[in-house]
Image 1 (cartoon, one colour):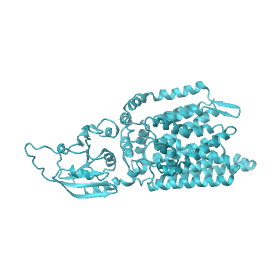
Image 2 (cartoon, rainbow, N blue to C red):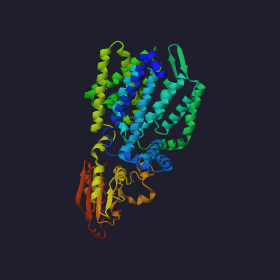
Image 3 (cartoon, rainbow, N blue to C red):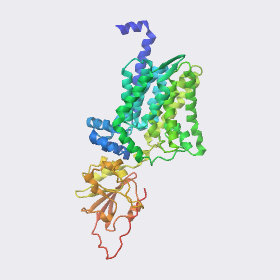
Length: 533
């Protein structure tokens, strides 16, 4: 009855609420469609296989093993329980990331509804639903979209806390969400920097809105206390500084074309194509427009603008010393791009409606282009070429049809061993070839990273020298993610190749092992040359 009375008294308000609900449903459907479209097409690669195999263990095992890796454990623990409920199939496992990203979208809508106009809110919702970098990492079994979910939730809690400082539940939410973010990825610290610089104190015209400093310090202290159990492992990881060697040194081209990469899903470009710097310039212009209007009407715009620029600039400065500048680490910050654009378009629409509509259309076209690259697997994000071309899943499926009881399987690199283990349905425990570099020190046999997922009782599967390889089988399958002609010089002469299974860049070569020749007295063993990696 009250709804009917309200609709009669305030028909415009009632219609707005109905339109908002319809718009929310439409945006959610659009976001789900964008993230679940072709989600099972890319093959599981090393990073995803690591997540899946680690998450099969108990929470205690995950905690202890992740301490020897480069990330905190929360994502893997949640994935563990997620797989208990839904299984470890590709769709089920990647759904956690996809749904977390849709959750981030909903939180962004809530945030915008708290700090800006209805029009800006729905512009941001539409642009974020189609944001290519978000879609790309919502289709990967990694923690990046979950980090975005926690941080956006914490930002919403912060804004609610600023607006109603006396409410006790908002600081509790803020502490719990920020703690979860820190247990998910270390780059959560960048969002704390945003909140300290921009978030906990804002000005609305002449009035200052702020969280009491005592309550603010107490909340941040609570986050530190809750994080203390992980701090010793964090320190050990920082001292070891392992796992960052794959990130290339930062260049000015990479930094200046970063927004292009996030939207168009193309990598850094040559100096002759520096026009691709234009999206970065336009984002700066949009941020300036939002901040200028913020002086009178948008007290929280500094927070929204800082949510993107503070993390990106911070990582840029750190990367001048240690290379850490990579798009996937900044997926959470990229969620602010549509918010900044929405603020600017909303401000411009009051005077330049036609130009604003054209600008909106161009942004949407750019996002559609980026999405097409994601679905075609032609984006230049880390791991994409492997997910597309290394059809290890198809090779292992073929191997399952060809293997016989008693066959041996050898995988030539840890990088392929973990995905092989995930897909392996042959019932055969594969051996792992660990190449020996010229220094003579075996690469990667330490107790961290992917090597930590190989149980101690299976360390006998490792070998680095064919002369030490003891095989009982006559048939040996050699599996590799990339064809390596240099292996032909490694295989013993009494191994005869009789079959090859090949899909994409992956292959499985079947050798029949004959009798090894008896070495002559005094003969020297030919030194093994390591394969090129």
